[in-house]
Amino acid sequence: AFVIISPSKLVSIVIPHFFKKAKYSSFLRKLVRWGFQRNRSGKENGSFYHKHFQRGNEELCKKIRPCDTLILMDTAQSDNKNQNSYGGCQTFQYQSKEKQ
Image 1 (cartoon, rainbow, N blue to C red):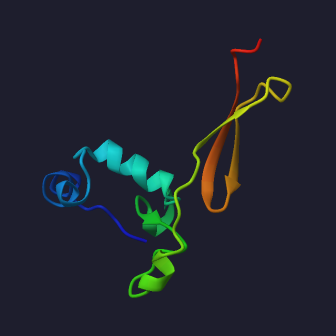
Image 2 (image 1 turned 180 degrees about the horizontal axis):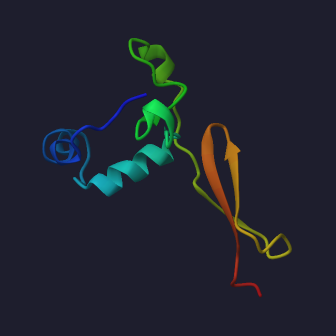
């Protein structure tokens, strides 16, 4: 897990070296897209975690893959918003309103 201590320094110093857009919100979306999850409780509250992101284990990082974050469901399925886990990635399923 890792913690972002200073979002402003991350945006002004680190992000411009690796990404075209230097926005904190864009960086957070990229973390989610790559399967990182935010710890929301306990002593690691606010930290980001991925099972293949471990200090000193560069070979394990090669297993990190981007996730599809939005799956549109057929209208025959439930109208409810469902959240599932797929391969360490969060997927959100919505019913398509266009076919109704």
